Length: 222
Image 1 (cartoon, rainbow, N blue to C red):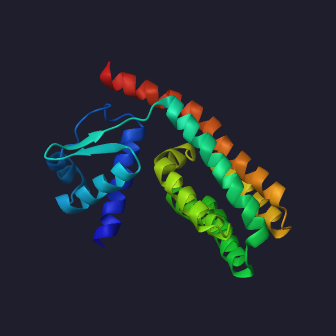
Image 2 (tube, helix red, strand yellow):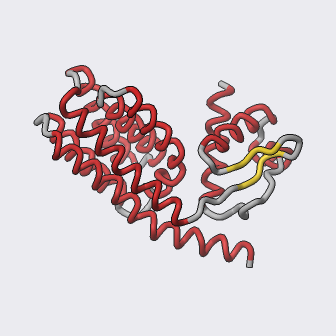
């Protein structure tokens, strides 16, 4: 129960950070946030630890948690690397995926479709995340899977944010279907290309979202 509360708090703070509600370098006030979210400091501190792991905050001994806004160029570069890592996972997965893994991946695709039909953004993202992690595992390379999961975690708040762009969820769903179809054919090159395009499109979409984010941040500090 405590972990779920911490996850919910982390997601809310993530959203506040990426939409410019906190200034770069601003100290997070534990007392104020605990009161705002109606939680104790324990799940809040767990959320801070998770946010630190994703690079959105820095933790300083006896001083607390401070906001760290990634540089725009750094974010674009991370998306570029993520696209190549996911393409590598897809290339290998097309050769190593098992029947049970294909079934599990298919289940996440159906769940994503259902989330879109219900207009449930949060559920779509959860199933979307599972879809990607299953592909990492299907690569058959544990080191690659761990590195993919690590960078995925770092980019998680921004991958969530870009899904809110108008029309992005249905487009993301079509891309998932293309990846799945290539996997069914055991077509390594097509699977890699589909995943590379899928993540690269996230980066392109993110450019527009980042512009809006910067505008909100400047309005807040202006």
